[in-house]
Image 1: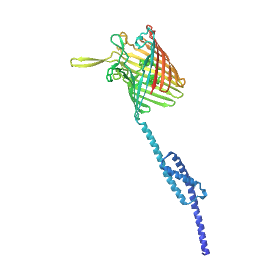
Image 2 (image 1 turned 90 degrees about the vertical axis):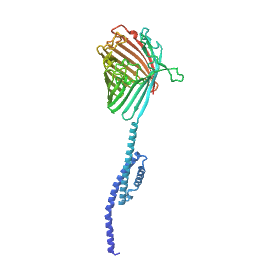
Image 3 (image 1 turned 45 degrees about the vertical axis):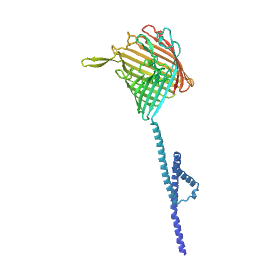
Image 4 (image 1 turned 180 degrees about the vertical axis):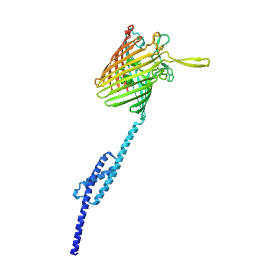
Length: 505
């Protein structure tokens, strides 16, 4: 080769080297950027790996991450900075992005599947069966001169009683509907004192021959079932539930707590015994509650058939009422409430009148008594640690229609228009896990009344909780009667001792 030719070749090689240098440098810069992007993607995939356990994309992710870790072990100076490597990394990043999108889609599908499964579980129909059984004894302490002494089965002795047997059926379909039925199994009317029509009273005997037994002539006690409540609920909104059927009247504390296992005292207060507000009503009710921590405001409003001894034969007018309460939660849980009710009550006598002209029979309804009643009450409850307190007050006004006053057991006397006032206070303290003593006092005032216009009651008791479902409640009390406008009725005063063993299931 001539000297001129060698010079030309050398010059060409020199120019080629200088020309390729920028390309190599650019490739190196792109490589650094892509390495950073690749590292970020690897980190995201590593995070997703823990969330997408068991998915097929995990294998690809694991291999790519391993390759990246191996590449990081090579010294930077030894990494080839070529256009081919840059293109290969771009292809790998594109592939990782596809894997990442696929993994994210699978994770979201898995979460949606869990949510759907939870929703479906909540919407499954369910039927719960629960209740309680109680049994125990009663003992009365009566004066010899007490005029009611002969009404009691035994004078001065313990009487063992089967107590209450309540069964609840609670059905839900998961779409806002619920049906609740509570029935009480009893021996009624066995033992009920009724008039024979000859001036004598006699206990009811419900024994009948068991004709379906093998012997055919043994006797069984024909008993009854008390329907405590049976209603259907629909939760239209968190602030509105509609209830239709036969429900416990929402007033005060006692009538809502209702069951023996939840009540502190096992003796009913006077306004429960005489039903100053009907304990149960047939109708429609709207209820709801709004929370604004630590407070909650709730309401109950209802329209019903009103007071009647027959659910299917209501009085002339409907009965209306409601309850409003404010509850505060926390270390001390407190509830303030007010309730009201108004309606009419009356008897109904249907006379058959023959019309000779049309040769037909007409049915004419009349009343022997009819009255309008108004009731309003207030209540307060407190739960603070082991201390519990309850208090209620209720005022009732009864106005009879002219000439339609309700007769009494004395044919010469009738119920007057009157005011009735009821109140009680109850306090208990839980000592340890098992023992809860309590004190209870109540009063009833009626103005005016022809017989008893004042009743005071004082009692104390002890509740023993063996478990959350097994307990014994025992209570002793004394009642005092007074007639401020007539002769003394102190002989009516009496004491009582009652005890119940209660099992919840």
